Image (cartoon, rainbow, N blue to C red):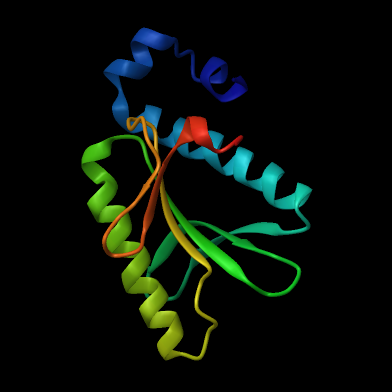
Length: 130
């Protein structure tokens, strides 16, 4: 990618700098989400409020329905992402927002898509195109 080249990174350097790799991975996922959302008549946004609550991506469809996404490179961060999505969706519902149609953690280091007991989906980046 252009960002990787602009930073003078290569595969080895990225694996040795997981923080930068995480930012690159997040940008890749957001790019894909934006393309798929727009192809389906939706829009992708970022969410951050004045209290620093944030979600990596929010996809809103033309009918107003929406879904929220956290993007995590490592599987060890899935729980953090899911908790954040649940917390913020509850906060938004308390302020009169519609309930999200989907809460999803996109992960770079998981092989299978599944639904957690709390209702949050976990999806590998490789499944986005499907």
